Length: 413
Image 1 (cartoon, one colour):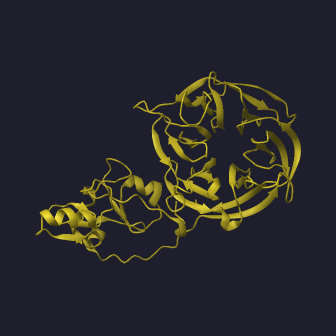
Image 2 (cartoon, helix red, strand yellow):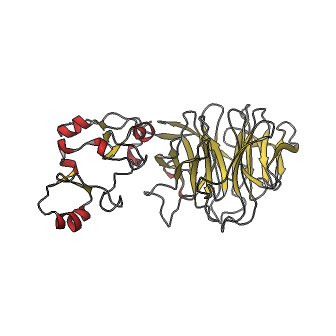
Image 3 (tube, helix red, strand yellow):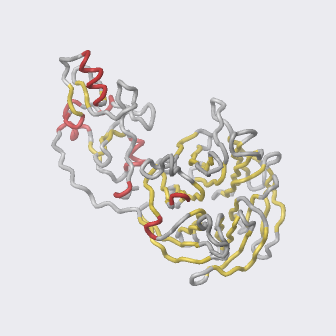
């Protein structure tokens, strides 16, 4: 796993020991072994210990003991390597999740101070448009790919649902339904499972277009997000309805078996705090981790929350500081996991894809505007392993404007 060189983010740096990790360390006192930032060196340490020898952390050489530096990302873990690529100390867990493929220096070599780094040739994360289609919808909020290569597409604003075939540059409608849905996914029997305004999920027969009740019911809750795992479990994001904020009622992730029996329910952590604000979209990892697109308000500002099978929060991703600011917040919508268990999520308002590890840590982000894709929303894997991106049109566009569907080749992760 490697990071695109133009858009990479390193591990969170080790924090200053005097200001409790608020600032990145830049110096070390060789007399009392304190790691500190420049502000604490000048305002605090030199005032009370004028005779102590303080050295720039980059020039410490033999004085650095990696095991004395605690990893800021993985609590309780001592650092064991220095990542030259990201200029930070990391623990063994960091290597597997974020820094695999980076230039890593062991303690002995780091302390010699004579390491000559020669950059390795790294593969880069790359996306390329394979095909572009014009749809018959204004927005493509949902995609479910059938085993024969056809797909179901949904526009939740205009309550339209279509079964389509992909032609040279357009979608050909096989079946069109006027029905309000909130999410959809394909079952292993090739039926389409959808969430509607009822507590019970619905099944769509792809051959006839007939809609029937499924065996999955989360009463008294109302389902929103829906996902079927590789081992046939059904994961549902549900709530008691109302407003996204203020948060009232229940916000729950429910796991059911193939027969509709509830297996698990995730709602609160060990401190009785809510795990989720509004579970809008869901996917899963092969190891059982559950990845939830969690909207935090009505503007779809949100985050990605990764839950372990036991219900612990493994990671929370709220966007990348280089592109997600107070004025341009992270707006996650579509989400999928790749065969290599990376998480891909669309950032609709910012025209981005964010690629995460299976625990929700950033690998990189990709600006889709660079290849001409705007307002990406839904995601799905094709039967051949490419990625489909369904888009929505810009606000204020004429009703005659049709949304685009893109099929992308990808590499590097």
